[in-house]
Amino acid sequence: MPTAIAVTSPDLALPAPEPSAWLGQGGGPPSGSWGSTPLDRQTPAAVVLRAPHQQPLDEALTETSAVLEHHGHLVVLYSAACPPEHVRRLHTLRAVLESDRIAILPSALPPLGVAVLARQLRQLSVCGFSPGVLACAARLLAHYVHAGALLGSVTGLDRVEVDLRSHMKSWLPGAHFAVLATPQPQLLHVDRHGTDAGLRPPGFATRLAVARGQLTADWVTSALAPAWQVQGVYEAHLPTESARWWGTQKLIEFAAAIPDPALLSRLVASVRREECGWCGQEVIGDRCAFCAAPLARDRAGGGSAGREPAAIAGAPAALAATAPAPGAPPPPAAPAPDPSGCSTLRQRGLSPVAPAGVPGVVGISGVPGPDGAPQVPGPPQITGVPPVTGAPHGTGVRYGPGVPGVRGGPGHLDVRGPDVMAGAVQRPTAPPPGLTGDPDHPDLRTLPGGARRVAHVR
Image (cartoon, rainbow, N blue to C red; front, side, top):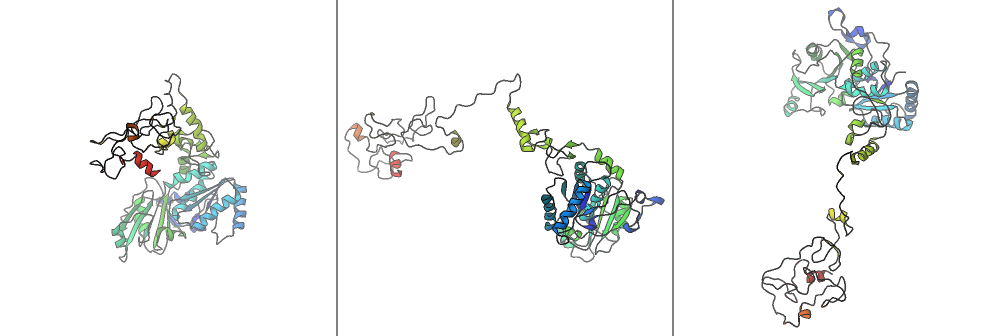
């Protein structure tokens, strides 16, 4: 059985006319309504998944389960104007049924454009395409749908860029705007009685579907259709989501698309197909429509052609990239481990600071490190002040028992001054010039990291 195509509203299920209806018999393009047009009996009907307030969940589950059992796969299209609660219902059906055979595809097309696209997919469903190719064809065919509307006001239009001048003209009585939403947005202020279309025409043969709202004008059929050289103009019911999408009820919506199913089939068949690495479906484009997994060639680092997801597929490629190629020079030797055991923290600027006098810690002034490690200079000397002779900082003097003239063990600071080591010295009554504070000895300068400062902190 062919893959089922579903929409969210009955007015999005357009009937498919017979090929003779769009060939333009008699030398002129046909026109009329869907009710007076012979229908194509080979095109399957669309499945309608109604809104939550129109159908209970258990009935929707029963209906959707029957469709999957009969058709095998289901492709659902909905527009950006679909209510959020309706979109949640679609995902609820897929989750409760626990089925990966349901593809839920949002579309940037206006509602009438979504209806035309759904009809094209229904026509292609009997052409022998796999469910994955048919679902991915929705993105491809959407680029060939020229959808727009004739609006009486653009004050509520937020899906197409509107300049200030157009907003001001919306307040004028009788103003009309021709808006093309896809494939390239365009907005024009037009004369409803004029014959100039102004909008960019498609570069291929199309048929035009027209849905009238609360706007009365013949510009679409009298100006746009001849300028675009369409093969037929047909009337359709205005979708209920159109007023929400365009921001006004004063509109006439139109959509021009390729009418020939044979041409659509050749267009889809010309695209390269690949296999989804996750669910195994055939895919055209860069992403699977059923599981939303990207193709292997679009994954980071080149990806893999396997069936595993992107996060797993990148692992073999990463391992292969790290292996040296035959004949290539050996990689550089890894740096020696940090003796302090905190290289990671050092790189982040979080290297711990050990108390002065602890040997083997690199990066602290006055503390000797391992052999060959660079020494960090101590605090700068001040002109006119004798150097520190008893403070450990900047001298490299080790602490511990057995060291002459040094009191205490590791971690203890000698703050008695140099008079203990060099003999009794008369202490000055005032600090030397250029120094602030009131030190006990001129050698104990109140510089950051000095012995007195550290002693006060501790």
